[in-house]
Amino acid sequence: MLKEWEKSDNNYHLIEYEWAHKYLNWLRDTKDWNFFRYPMSNSKLFKNNVLIPGLLKDKDYELVSTKVYLLMKHIYGGGPDIPLWSLNNMPTNY
Image 1 (cartoon, rainbow, N blue to C red):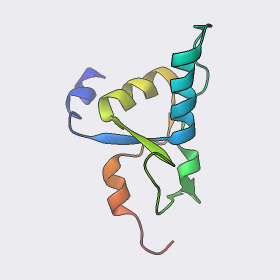
Image 2 (image 1 turned 180 degrees about the vertical axis):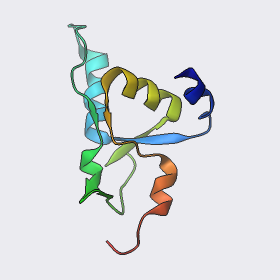
Image 3 (image 1 turned 30 degrees about the vertical axis):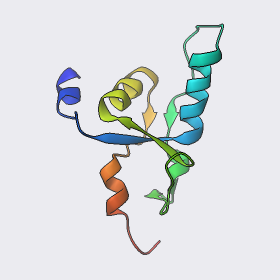
Image 4 (image 1 turned 45 degrees about the vertical axis):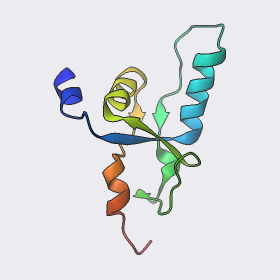
């Protein structure tokens, strides 16, 4: 896994906004340090298995470094993976 992280220093991934903020609130507010039980889910960012056009940072998604994304995915599971570059390669006819 470390080799994959080392290759991804300058890359970013999207994490669905609602999940990211539930996780941050859990980190900030929890008195119960049991394992956070929600897999990372980016499914709300897709329609018919296609990334939804016009997604907005800080409304629909948060950006994290690929290193952080891979670590969180390893711990919590989930996906699908959405590298930042994929926003620039979206179909124009949706």
